[in-house]
Image (cartoon, rainbow, N blue to C red; front, side, top):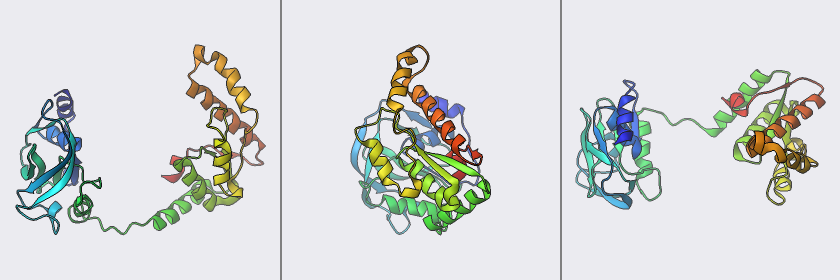
Length: 272
C-alpha cells in the first residue's frame, strides 16, 4: 500500500510520549514502527463487537478479559503484521488487530472510533488514555483559558489598537469577544458585506453581536465593487482572491480612520 510505504519512509517516534492512534492513526503508527498495512481487504463500516484479549490501561475499570463490547468501525485497510513490541489487546470478526498496544512505550492503537457515540464506552477509553496513560490531571477549565488569554492579549497589545475582521463564524466571534474583554474600545471590529452573502446574512451577523462590537463597515457599496472587479478576475484572480483584496482595502480604510495606529495581527497570533 502506497500510503503505508510513504509512512514508513517518514518513520519517527518520540520516546516517552504516549500515543493513541485511532483508525488510520493506528495504521500509520504500525507502518512507521515496522509493521505492515495493506489495502483491498474487506471494507468495514458500522457496528462491530470487540473481544478483549489482554489487559490494558485503556480498559481499566471499563472492559474485562474475555468480554465483548460494541464499537464503531470505518475502514478499508488494515494491519497485517504488527510492529515489534506490540501485542493484540482486542479483536473483532473482521479486525484481528482491533486493539494493539506496546505498554512499555505507551503506544496504543484502535481500529475503531472511540470518539463517536456509536462506541458506548469510547469516552471512558479516551479518559483512561488521557488520565492513566498520559498522566494528565484534567484540571484545565475554559474559565482558566479565558483569564489567561485576556491577560496575554493585554500584555501583547498594550496601549495600541487592534482591528478584527468579523465573518460571523465561531473563530472570529470568539476572538472578537475575548479581545474586547481584554482591551475594550481599543478594538475595532469590522464586518465586510462583499456582496456575495446569502439573503439577509449581513444583517443577521451584525445583529448577533452587542453594540460595542458592531461596526458593519462596507455594508453599502461593496456589491458594485466586487461586481466591477469580477469582470477581470478571470484574467488575473479567483473569486476568493478578489474578495480577499476587498477585505484588505476595507480594513486599510477603517484603520486610517483610527486616531491611533492599529496593530495588524491575525486572531490566531493573539490567542496563542
